[in-house]
Length: 376
Image (cartoon, rainbow, N blue to C red; front, side):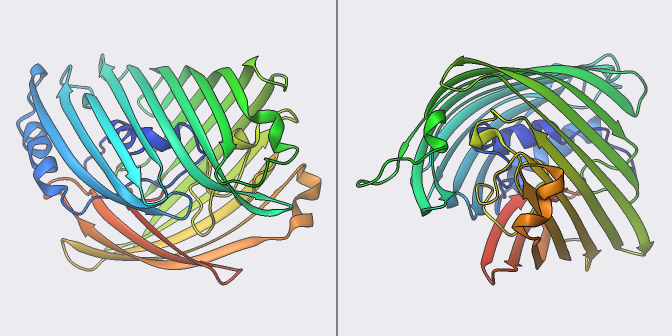
């Protein structure tokens, strides 16, 4: 299989830029009618057209579903092009989102790769008005979070497999009760209006055979950031996470994928930037706001099987913990989930799947996810 080194991030930005910017780790979006949008991209790659004028236009409606935002639709339009023959595709795109719980957002992304992928630039702007449930000692409280984000990342490839980079994020966000008759309780009330700038160091060691549908190899990704509070009641804070994913191909058409993740945040971290199951680790089974804390660890395993050229199926399971310190992780118990999923290959030339997953957690709650690609 040809290794498409990091081809996916631009499409990820288009699908997720609208709500990943404000909430941690919301599920990727998915599409039922992506084939017309994918075909021009396939053709452009097959012909190896180089240069901005030789790009392809992609327009995709994307149905979405996840337990945090509900069901909805994301509309994506992008222009994909290749700056030089040795680099992955670059792109410029816009997206708009609306979901069943009243959340809405729009965003723009522009990513560039050049000099044989030695240099990569990723930029993002998003404006979002998001409704979700905040899990407190008083129960689940509906809140509304408005946010505007600007993010930019520059990375340099030291080797074809290893890159390091610098990223910065500016976030202007406000939070208000989503219903009448209550106020947001402490400690959440100290994060209601904030302006934050977050420089970060990122590193990526990628030995997968394919970045869209890997069958063997591994990917180690890490990020460490220090955020400066420009406006708000809390002080500066730091956060870091590490994701290690490994892939095996034990039988024909079968892949075992596993991910181990950990996250650390300092004491003054706002709740919407804290660690949680589903945030930086893409864990399925719980809303990403349910287990917010300063530490988290998780382990996930998934078996993927191709039934035909177009259809596939998966079975997955995972377990994780969160707490205010690593020594207290077990205090809140171990949270687990397992489920089944279906895959439909939406591209004839690249292994891009529409994914529909059903997950049941240890609280006997069912969750539905619809997105494009694999969860990790």
